[in-house]
Image 1 (cartoon, rainbow, N blue to C red):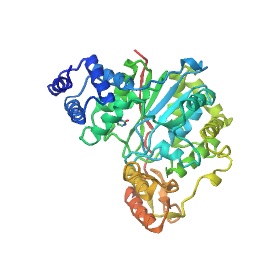
Image 2: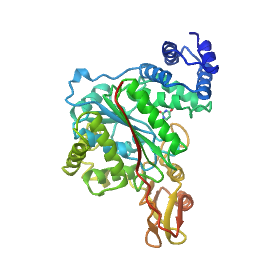
Image 3: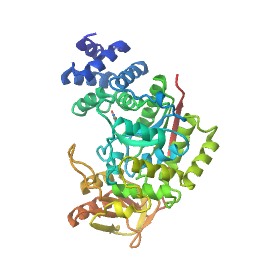
Length: 442
Ligand code: URA
């Protein structure tokens, strides 16, 4: 099918044949098709949608547009598993989950991204660790996945290259918010990692990528459905992002929190609960646990014995970071020059938070990017962020700002006061896990 005929068919609301979609996606990857036709296709798909069969075909074509990782030759003793998230604020789940699942027998080749909009990026956080190499060669990456069980690195140029072009065009043609294009984009990249099973964390709430809970639930359902039809058993959880998941947001501050959680110093927390729920699903999907109870027991043991922390330490050292990061975090993680507690104008109980605004406050402090490719300041961010239901007063601040100078701290203080809404009445903390959609491979 000629590209213009395929665009015409989608423009007129027809379902596209799988073979035609595959040819079109391959032509995007090889550069045979220009941005005008990619943009027209994206708009036609945005306006007229795609059914599940088309979305599966688009996903598989995106996955196959570059290198698809294979692990068979390594004779791994356990399944290859991964998690993907739609992103959030104070969301350091990946940093704890990967080593935790590895300590229970999973192999986790996690390809992560940088901060996007108000959301933080796992790669940016890892780069707060001196020496950590997010772009190792293939041999090193594979060796770590085999021997340590986890390696968190950045996307390589030859992984789903069609998505890179399609996404860049969507970004400037008002077509990002298309459900089938989002599903194929996320899954095309993840399924190129040669997974035995996938778990997806779709966020819902004021810091989520999707605008409503209904949209988050629809994305979770379609992801699980399409991935399973493309041959990868997938569970999607819809989890709360109506407040930062950890009590901190930023890069070095989130690495510190990761170490506290892995060492068992942070006690139970919202972040640990969501991470545990995702880990349970990974162990079940990967057949590493007989049932939910067994999965929970294994995870508890891996955390309290220090096995999960040890996997994190070995991953960091294996990728060029310091071997004693867990023992001496203050020696390696740079602190911001200025730390300032911000108090509310009058005492009150936290009713709700504009989580997106908190994420943008971190970006403006220098912890994220205002322009693609810009350098970031790993030292800045927020800690001790008050949670829904907590009382703040002259003693308990709204949060502590980590800033590079007084002017940026002052701006962030104003943003914090506007983003954390107080009242006089008790407020119930939101449910953490809203929905779970489980699909076997079909
Ligand atoms: N994340 C992706 O990778 N792709 C999308 O289309 C949206 C979010």
